[in-house]
Image 1 (cartoon, rainbow, N blue to C red):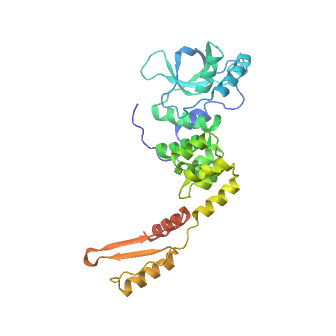
Image 2 (image 1 turned 90 degrees about the vertical axis):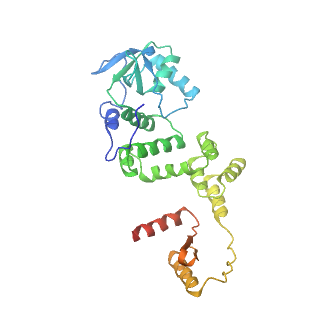
Image 3 (image 1 turned 30 degrees about the vertical axis):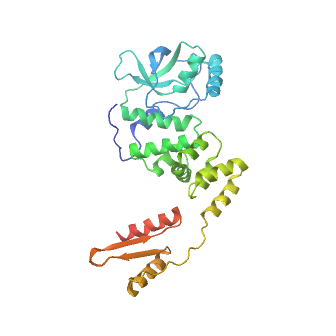
Length: 296
């Protein structure tokens, strides 16, 4: 597959291919033909190997298959001509329906054929997943992150396009900072997104997550647990090194007071030195970055 490069600016053609070219409202009535809609044999369709969604719940597929047996596939799949195998088509959006149609033993499905490059295929697949599927919070967060990293979309643009609040997207993205094991528990539904957000800034999220699950703690109780975990006893005042002069100590004090964070300066004379700023949590880190950015 061609290398995917970030695309700056507004939302790309992938979004229009999904949202404008294809009506995502109520599906096509059974037996009705519409402009551009074709019916293709199931065996001519193959999944997209870069489909962002990896897990398809067997129970959900069985339920969808039951619906397809009685009503048929109401919404066409979006496909593109396979880039290397003539006569085959690659699924861009609608793999769940394709899988369920096989379970339902349908022989063909309605499709819309679109000429999309590899980058647009990924963009459409990500957006389709976010808009249509019941993604767990980690899958949704990962999809937003891919849209931002690969296509240069901002949180504001995504919030507008997806009809979601910016805070919703921001809170989801924070979950990706959790350790892998905690992300797995959120994926499996053992922890909610609210639990994950409460744990993300704690010193040991895995241990606390186990405690939350063992005690069946609510989100509010988890937030209190996280608050206590983040409260550290006040460390004893470090002994002043004998070779640190009064001016250096005064500068440390002034900087610590202005930043409201502990500052330590280790001056090595003509060889320079090191200044260490200690922050307590991500909020303090954000404030420090804003302060340093304003000095540029």
